[in-house]
Image (cartoon, rainbow, N blue to C red; front, side, top):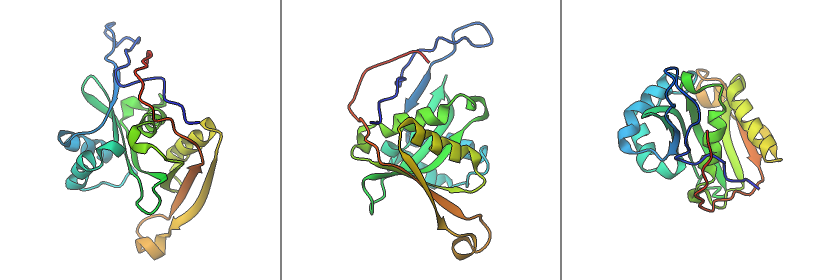
Length: 195
């Protein structure tokens, strides 16, 4: 069973900032169109992520808002995950990109965003998570192996897009990570807990 994450959108923070004042709480939310420029800048600051057009990011923030998530603290976007439900496999959720700002790294933020995103009602009926990852992207492999471990399921890896056949030799081969099966609890809850 994929349980709802403990932290909710408005979880208070018990931590203090370097000034000794309470740190702003971490919030998870859907993107809106005005987030487009900040998402574009975050992706650009997170190599080796492919940079999308600004318009593409706007479409994700609007047409696919239910399948994307922002993590922010004090009005600053620290993390972003974009995805969609593939029309040919509606029981799957495809993770497109995961970006975490340098100040958000090392805190399990990507895992927390992914858990939060997968428990939204828009993901009802999802039994598998899919992603494509280059062989050398250790952070992404760790994220998805961690998802499989947390939910006692498997991660299957197979080549999906080859360097020469699909990228004309200018991009490394992409492997598909397929995690599942598992069940996701998308029941709304008002539970909050400290960060």
